[in-house]
Length: 113
Image 1 (tube, rainbow, N blue to C red):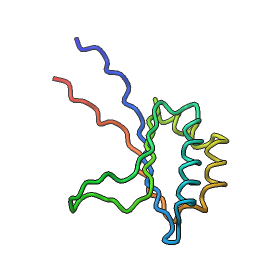
Image 2: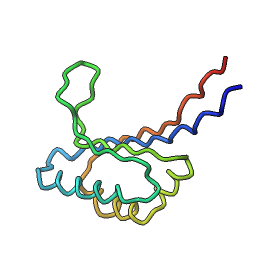
Image 3: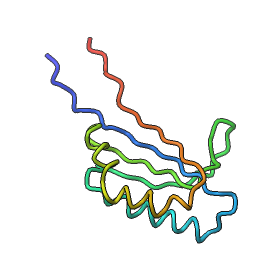
Image 4: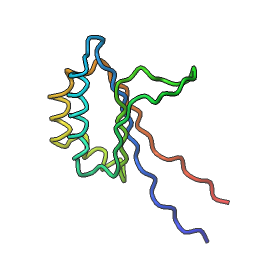
């Protein structure tokens, strides 16, 4: 008999696109906000990234920052969405982005043999 597998994490991945007029100070402020956002307690793991120096036609490189975080469950991600730090981030730092694209995902169930 197979032991139950651990629950797959809930993945929240956000791409932030800055305004065409954004300067380095604007980007630094957005980064400051993302670093504060990492303080939400329900986040299991977070990663702030910038486009890698890869060059293939299928790679999206026009975003300013990538914000990736993992949660133990969808309920934990919902707690994150309602947390005061997240509210503060949206209210204080939204002026620094032009567009946000969000990818939320959950694991695909494994097949049992």
